[in-house]
Amino acid sequence: MAQTKVSPELHNRPTHVKLDISDKIIRGFTYVIVSLFSLMCIIPFWMIVASSFASEASIRLSGFTLWPSEFSAYSYELLLKSPDQMIGAYVVTICLAVVGTAIGLFIISMTGYALQRRDFPFRNGIMFYIYFTSLFSAGLVPFYLLIVQTLNLRDSYWAILLPLLMSPWLIVLMKNFVKAIPHEITESGKIDGAGDFRIFYALILPSLKPALATIGLFLTFGYWNDWFQSSLYISRAELVSLQALLNNMMKSLDYIANNPSAGLSLQQYRNSMPSESVRMAIAIVIVIPIACAYPFFQKYFISGLTIGAVKG
Image 1 (cartoon, rainbow, N blue to C red):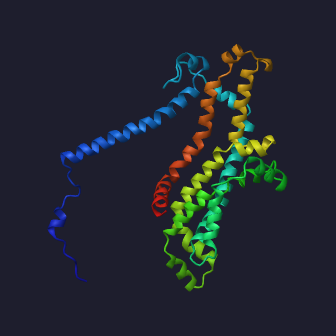
Image 2: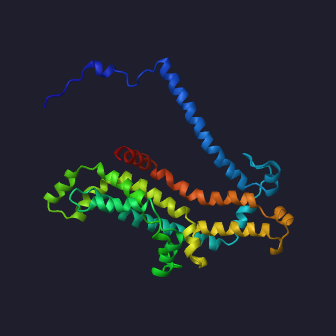
Image 3: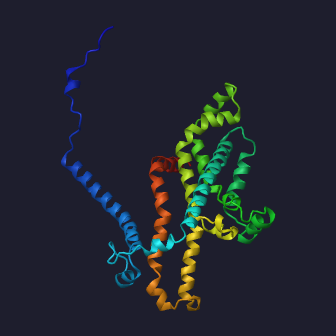
């Protein structure tokens, strides 16, 4: 077998391109801007962390600082006073986020794919109906009656799962993602004798990883940050989500502060109860778990948003 001769010029070619002075200046200026912007994002978060470990007296005296002048972990002790209840709320929220995101992605991806199929009848009318629901709403009272009386879902996880399962905007976003997939892929599956669900599962779904990551992150954030649905439809303590539990704890602290007859005078409350640091501790307890999961989806999330914006 003949060996290919490599030109000597290819061996001597430099592997790194030399930058001139203007390129170095622009690159350095870019690094400075990005570093400053990163600090602008990190400093407020660090102030929340520092304030959550500060005593209430130091916050009233010095305000929110980058380092607590008087260290105190009483806020976290107060939040973890009932660890079983906190762990249970975490489990409920995680289960709702995982199950709701999985079901929501399954329904939204199939809906977006079906509405993009050229051979799907009445797709324009159905798309108009979905879009129309994003412009008008019946209001809170009819929706509450639907969940509680018609569907009888009070004190049920479905009362939280169903309202956040999908939205018209997410369906439109998924439809724009599917639009980037050539229709010939569907036709090739039909020629090979595959059914619609087989085509969707084997040919379309693998191409939608950025879309699934992007919409999945939106759904996860929706379930993780929700407290309103749980406050409306859940009355049993073992079914309360994390956000609703922390919101109820904060309301209890505010109630004690504004009602001296509850057991503490206003001055006693200010001296003993860390209201401001508790707010910061609540923010940390809520943000840390979801912030740890975000880097795993960041690559798909950014590319997904870009594709969805361009292909619309």
